[in-house]
Image 1 (cartoon, rainbow, N blue to C red):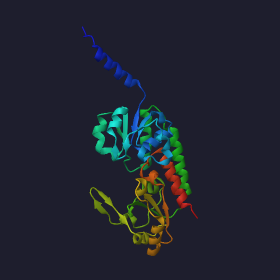
Image 2: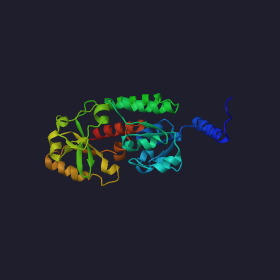
Image 3: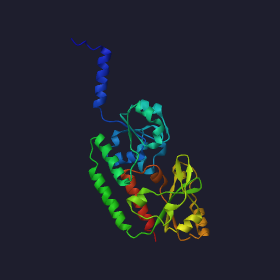
Image 4: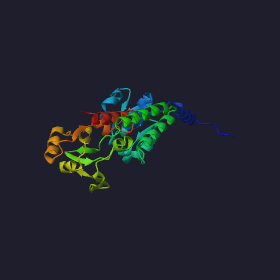
Length: 284
């Protein structure tokens, strides 16, 4: 005969059953995924977010309804444990804490990988929607139509250069939204510029002279420094340096820092990024 459950064991079984049947509670470190959940009207499933790094368009998540779970590179493990989420959504920025996260809840890494950026955005949206028993297809159809309209608007646009600003220095950024999703060309020779190895990563520095040699119609800046709260790029100083190097005809456009550095890869952020590029290249 099967032994009777003790009272403590029975309570554990009931608690586990109740937890399994309760709605998903997500702790979301990936701001692109947070953006997607918001676009799919799934914000009620979000329990915690990294409030110190939210871009303006996700400011609604600063509300006390959502717990603060630390920074993108400094998670608050105590807050996470108290929150008791069913799923923790991360990217490579939180990779060092994956083992600690896995001890608390399921972990979903939504880093965008592969050679097709738009397909990776699609896959993340579908995976999150499926987990939460929602439908991402209408939003994805609308996003693809928006991208296609932008490609048409940019048909025949000249080559553009994208650079990341960090601490007064510029680095080449072959940004997939600009060059892959929108299909805009880099200036001839940009891909062949020499890089510098820093640890496991390779960076390609850009000087005003190099920009002048490449002669892009526009230089789009992703300002990492501004996105993380450091001193932003002084646009007037860069424009003066470019003019002195002979690149006075290159238009400098600083993109929205947090949008481009912190929250890319979402249904909303990709649309906003596309719109910023179209606006930048449509200036008189």
